[in-house]
Image (cartoon, rainbow, N blue to C red; front, side, top):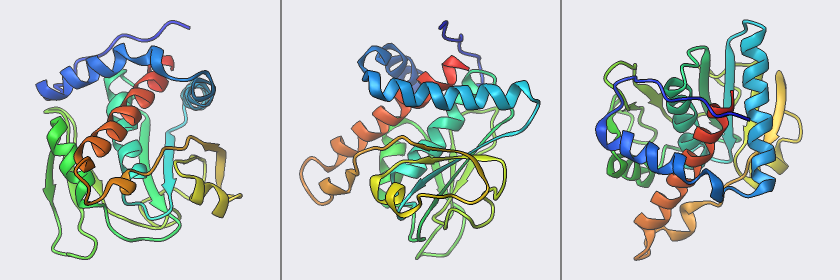
Length: 214
């Protein structure tokens, strides 16, 4: 299948370099994961062909780490390939907060991240990646709560715990496990930053691959 060419959306220069590197690494994705990513791409393509808005909700247990990275990178990748109808969301089986280590990793890579609320227990972050795009507003929430869709969406399960806890996701058109290892295992260790950045690289690589197939 031919992969699409990138569009210019005013992506921040450091992120453009990061995206180019991840796209060049698509050959490192395992066959098993390629099958899941192709299924995700097929859902997006099918909804676009039906002129439907494409709603993707990425779910993990606490909506604190992996689900946020997947939401952000799926939206960046969709914009890069001109898929304007793609909307991305994230949620958990419980709400906590977007982890500060994820915020730090995003900043290291080149995103602009600002705090938008004074709720210290669960702040809302504005995540910007391009001059021409609105920021993504990220905070922890249960997957069925606003602003997340409750009908006609794909539920992408990004961790094994949420996958097992939610065998049925009400209202979704597609439930698809695409699991990632939790970078939390590295918290407060010397390798913490590298583990978080590697998870960010992996999720970026795979979301870019999926959207390129649409």
